[in-house]
Image (cartoon, rainbow, N blue to C red):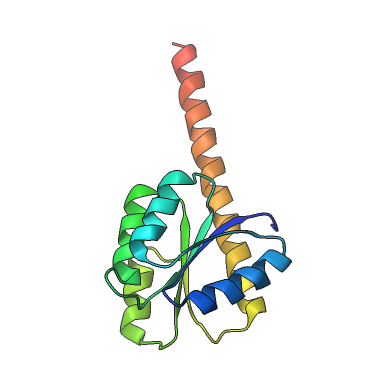
Length: 144
């Protein structure tokens, strides 16, 4: 699923730049944001984003609050939470609120890519189900 559209959100500019380069080399389309508010703006202007890779600890709006707002506005967008310091509580909270997965920033790039691919696949399945339901609904209305 190379070619998927990812949004990287982290207040650490150098981390975002390095990760963006590594993912671009693997043929992902990358957008970046350095705050929760900027991430929400990007999602509003770019309807093609499939997965958000979101830092948990950021000033102003943390990753949990950002994810809540992402899921309110774009429920099909998958969110992978990243943190430099893992806590069981934050991982559980993120998953309960709809995060696709939770990884440490120190995770191997291949692990992140596997999670991204799985998240994109799940988003595509949900989109296909919605499209089929709409088609079924439309076909049902025409047969009345």
